[in-house]
Image 1 (spheres, rainbow over the protein chains, first blue to last red):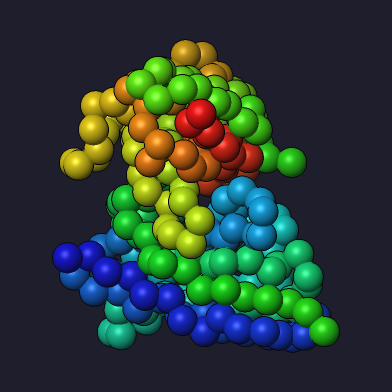
Image 2 (cartoon, one colour):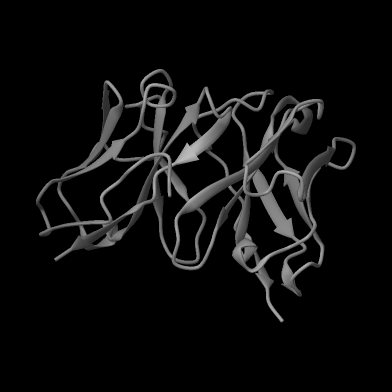
Length: 122
Length: 110
């Protein structure tokens, strides 16, 4: 059974940093790309970033490029999202999701984690 | 402002059918496949449709999808109160090199 478990969310001040983790199980981790998708309170889904199965290809939404960094440790079956220079508009539930192929290109996600809440506030 | 445009809300009575539209452009829906998700508060998005019209295992055939030109449509027939949720479309955008989502549509089953 495919499982994705996010952790690392919490309350952080504007300008601060946070690292999210997504622990995966139930599949061969390095043969799938991984993505982060967020949903701000009362808003829609927003794709944030994706990384290929090998980790050599990464892409970002314009709203987070230069501030967030996606990475993965295939030996630990875990994907990460390092979030720096956080802003109020980054407040959201962050979901990790499995790309159905090894690359970053996809139009759908079958498997999602339950999400972790990031709150950016003083 | 979302790249894909959806109506903010739709409503219909139990047992009726409803359609939700998703309008995009030539770099996303016009040349790439579309998916649809159901989102309930406090839960992860649930994939309803992929590859424009394919249903994952376990999704009832009350849910259907189609694509024409730069627009896509989700259909839900035999509406149930449990279908009340937010629905999102998504696609790949070849120009942005990114996954793009619609702004979401809130379905109310009256």
